[in-house]
Length: 539
Image (cartoon, rainbow, N blue to C red; front, side, top):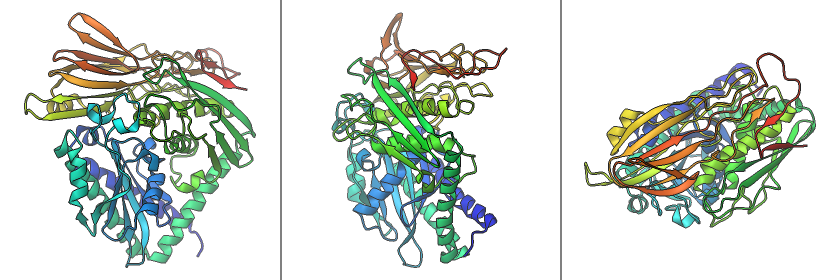
C-alpha cells in the first residue's frame, strides 16, 4: 500500500480530533475549577505499540511525558476490553502526584489493542502534608498518595476498592470522585471514536496510516535538524533555590547538531536537591520534545516519530533525572520551565533569528486549603498564574499569558469566588514589568486573593532572583514578587514557601514579565547577545 498525501492528512486530523473531543468531554463533565475552568488536563491517542499518534492542544508538560506512563501501564498490567488503568507515580512516567493519568486499550474485534487512549488531569488534592498536595516538602512520601499502575475499571466496572482508597486519602473526596469519573468518561469517548474510525476505514488501512504518520513525523524532524548549522551549542540557567537552601540550582545543556540528528546532553546540571524542584526523566524528555516540536510548523503531526532523531542524556540522580524518594511537585511546574529556557538559549546560537527571549519562566503556583465556613467541609485549591511572554524576533511578547510547558488559564474571578471562601481583590496586568528592546516582552500579572477563612498554603514560583533573559540586546523582564498582607503589615514570601494566613489576610502575587528582543528600534542587531546576570550561553 502506498501513502496517499490526502489520506495521510485525513488520518492525522481524525486522530487529533479524537484527542480534542476527549478533552472537551473531560472539561465539561469535571467538578473542580482547576480542570473545568483552568483546563489543567491533557488527552492523547497512542497506537497498539504505545507510540503517541496524536495529542490534543493541551498541556506540553503532560503530553510529552505521557508516553512513559503508557509504557509503564503496558509493562505492568494486562489490559483487556473495558479495562482502565490509573497511575500518578512520577517515577513511572508521571509528572507529580496531583496529575492522575488514565490509560485504556481500544480493542477491535477481539484482536488485541489497536490503540490506547490516555488522559491526565491535575487534581486539587491527593493527600500529603499540605492542602492541594503541592507543599514545600523533602521527599515524595510527604506529597500525597503515590499510585503505581493499577486497575480502576475491569470489564467496564469500576473497582470500588481502588476508588475508595484514593478518596480516603483526599481532603475533597466528592470533588475527586467527580473529576475521576470525568476522566473515565473521556477514555470511553476516545475508545468509541477510534473504534468508529477503524470500522469505517478497515483495520489494514488504519494500521498502515498509523505507521505512516510515525515515519512522516520523523522525516520532518530530520529535515528540520538538517537545516540547522552543524555544531555544539551550550547554555546554562538557574533556578532561584529549592526552598530550603538559598543556593541557585544550575541547569546546563549541550546540544550537538550533526547532519540530521541532535544530541541533547544535560551533563553538568546540579544534583537532585532537598526541596521539591527535582524533575524526573519524563519531565526532561517532555521539555525536549516541546522545544524541538516548536521549531516545526503547527500542522506537523505530534507523533513519537518526532523524537527518533533526538537523543536525550540526563545523568541519573541529577536535578533533571531525580530518583526516589526525591520530592518532585515543583519539578513538574518550575524546573520544566527552566529546562525550556536553557534549551532555547542554547538554540539561539544556532538559530539567532528564530528563537524568542525568555518568557516569565515560572508557573507561579498557588495552593491553599482550610475549612469552608459556608459548608463546614474542607476545601483545597490550586492554580497557576500567568506572566509575560518573551519578545519574538519579529514581534512583541504577549502579556498575561501562560507560556511554554503550561497551556492553562487563570481561574475566572466569578468561578473562584463562587467555589471558595476567597475574595479577589485585584487582577490586572503588571504594567512596566516587560523587558525593553526592539521588540518588548509581555507584562506579567498582579493577583491579590483575600482569604475569608484561615488557610494553610504554599507558593512554588521562580524568577524572583534571576530575571527572564533578553536576547540580541533586549533587556530582561522584571523579577516576580510574593507578599502576604495583614492589615498594614506586609510580609515578603520567598519564591518557594509554605505559609499560614488568618481570615482577612491578602496574598499578592506579582509575576515576571518576558524578556525583550533586539537592542532598539532604530538599528538592526547583527550579533546575538544574552542580557541577564548569571545566565549565559557557553561557547
